Image (cartoon, rainbow, N blue to C red; front, top):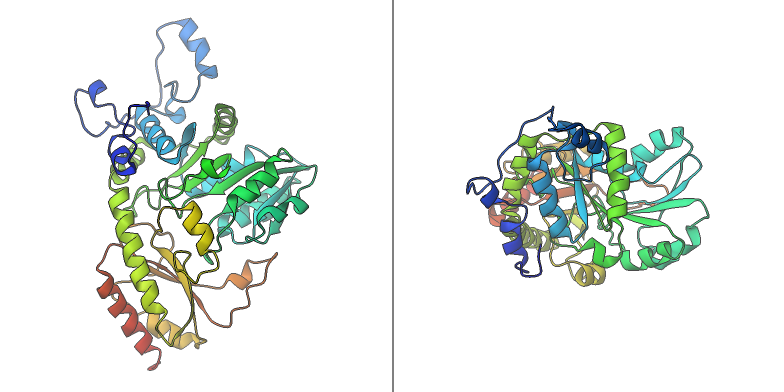
Length: 394
């Protein structure tokens, strides 16, 4: 945005990536469906292959519907530019592949989203790229793990199951001292609760499926870079992969994004109310939410983030599986399902012991991840209370 553009996030969310004057005064940017694009001359056709992002040359490379969404996300995250792809997993895959080659070594936080780990342990391994997992709380000591062939450091703060906060500025300083790129999964914070490039990140990845879309009906990923050079590097990888996101999905993401600020305020407020209530329950051993004052990562969260989303976990006292099933199978408001970020609340049991390698998850109890949606938090508390009561009847 120009220097005269509004600075407040809520205002930028409403106005970023809009061109009403170019589209007959239409408030929402229209949907452009296209595959073939026609050129007026041979000279224009020959220049198409070298076009920068934002130029309409072929449907898979994007149309104004996608470009306006990308412009808005880049503005909100504070990056140079954004490229949208078909899912959060596609964004992770393309962002990492853009910077690695056979023989490289990469560092990945042990708290990472499982599809990221799966990519590293299967596809990357098959092509001779070594992944080393590190303690998410390592901070600047990550310098001791960087090798001459380290290509990138992958961060996720907080982790989307166990919610460890990472000291991104310390990691970035250590990595950049050795010429290593830093990539961050910024999905939990959305584009507006964390400014990744101010923390030293080179590339920020999001599953737009979650909070940008906000309505559980679109698959979308975004990759935002700090520099033009990095944007072109990622663009080349996406073109090779043949990835694309449809214009209707971009339109829905644009529409959902306009209410992101007000939705996140409610997710934050309701999430904390539920989290504080869980702290009082005898069935709960521990609540993992970085916005709680006693959370180990609270100081970093307070320094680097402007708010919290609705996603957090808690550890239950040990129960038998039939008890857990009796609790979860009969929830009225909390649905059981993957993903998060929509208006509806979700509940999901998980076992981090199966996916940790650099650190040990030794909690004697079941990890339950909650996404607190936009329902009244008192109703959600009543639903959880009834669920805890069912533990006694199984």
